[in-house]
Image (cartoon, rainbow, N blue to C red; front, side):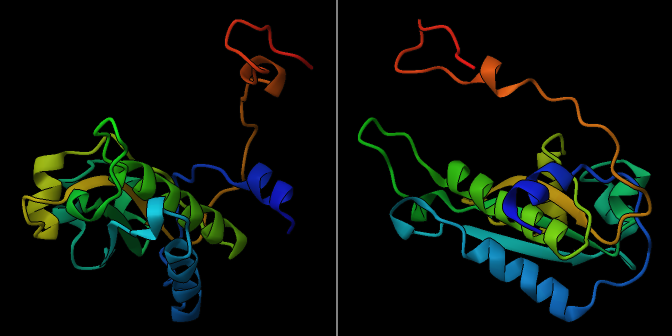
Length: 175
């Protein structure tokens, strides 16, 4: 599919088949994620791939929804602030970079026929414990990864003309 079709087709999957994700598809998705651009090419992130089969109760401590552990895999993206580029005003870009990586992962998964759902409303304390994270890194987001058991529905999105400004903030959006 071309990029526009891919962007339009991607949706937040909340019901998954339990079929395993073939290794070649998992590798394809993970490779696409690692190809994401990061500030100064620092790549201040780690992906934690967790199989749900024996860890459902443990993973539900991170995000307590049945469908979160219905897919065969859950992937966490973790920022490593000490490895990130820092803007001149002190803003650390590790979270921005992690978000870009997760977006690449999700789009690559969609292209491979897999479903995902970006989870930001997770329990950070439990994420540290379940993934065995050291205190100097930061969990950013999670997604289940598996074959969707449903079909995409209608997505409500504001039209671009309401979200895009030209030249300055004060200018009205243009068609």
